[in-house]
Length: 317
Image (cartoon, rainbow, N blue to C red; front, side):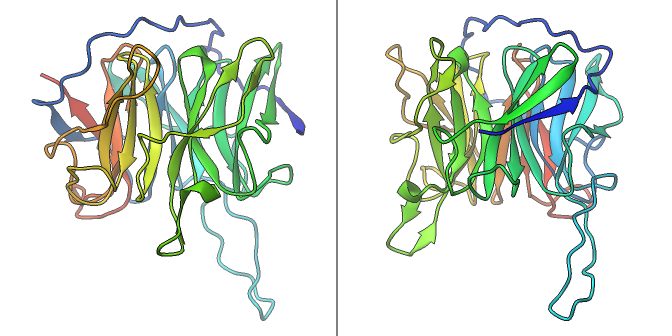
């Protein structure tokens, strides 16, 4: 496991204060929810993988919008340079008085390679995110931990109990420090069609050894079709995720919720409803830890009749 030390760019308003893992509240009732397009954050490029900081004061997401890092210079078979594009980078926006301030790239984390979804731990001093095609990676994309020590951030690969030679992404920190994530690990192959699927996996955290245990596939969550973008809600102790394989399904990836049983197992998933899900892909759910703010990503046609990835807000009555 390789370790990288990077200089601190911690914002002056960030306090590394541990947030308690709150007692779960009653499950959210989505039956009368309404959907709003988030015009102040969306662009004609892709915006996805939203998450709030534990305090709810920072909104972090992934985008290839203008201002993202240019991809590395590459060449075609004739030796001519290929056009450079914006890589997928991590962005952040202050969230003050229920209002988003102008997003800025989180330059400390961004490179000409692609960076992906973030999940915060108990506080802003520890988070998990996706890095792709790195020198110390085991496969295509791996999961990393970023921890603030004194005056620097330390970034390290989570190791072979979580990562392997396949694709791991979309981390979701959960109660007790454990981790959900999406992967195309071979156990998730659809052998009938010889195609790779995405499933949701889980790695238990051992507080004694302070390490993640070997990952397991969530059998009652996954189907023969695609499951992805897990999100653990501290507010109601539930797992939210996207799926093509559960029923009912209103088209593409739909958003589902699975409630936790007293013994720690997960109940059969329930669709969040056709007034939230569309005929397109709806995924990357996030809920602030106080339960007041709920957002997700969709490629449905937006206000400009485009089908890029955009943010939508779920408004409860």
